[in-house]
Image (tube, rainbow, N blue to C red):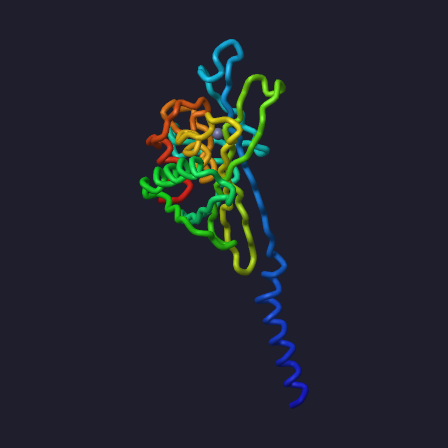
Length: 233
Ligand SMILES: [Zn+2]
């Protein structure tokens, strides 16, 4: 009888090991980041306040595979592709953010909330929830930048926890370069928030994700299509 009891215990331990141990073994955290910078070019031979041409330099480390639902849809950032993300985001502002920057980001937030595709909530999220941190930075351009001014940067950071309690979330960032007044405008905030939510650059001129800043503040049909593709709705 005593031996049978031990045998049962051994079996129970084995079952528990198979149920729990295996999952613990495969538990791993993968983090992929894809931040991009937005710059404008100021031609040296004209009044620097008059910006004739704006464009952007993408500094992503991973290659972007153009996987879109249609030719007109705004492409999706590579690190976001293939992931199932909740469309609810909790956003907060860095404590040092100036009120004028906070205002343009708040306007950008309502622009995205109006689409009904994503829901951005002004609250601090948990580790297992999608988050966006809005901030500023101060970066002075040098001659090495060849007359370009960096307006801001933004992008997703996809955190994937596997095994038990598996989850995939995006802890994104969007930031404006307050060194230059040109940065604090709605078109830049909408563009950087677009990156944070997973949108990549578009070749369509009416897209807020067009690399050459057109001062565009309204999401195009292609932008909406791209967002829908990310959030499956
Ligand atoms: Zn960009």
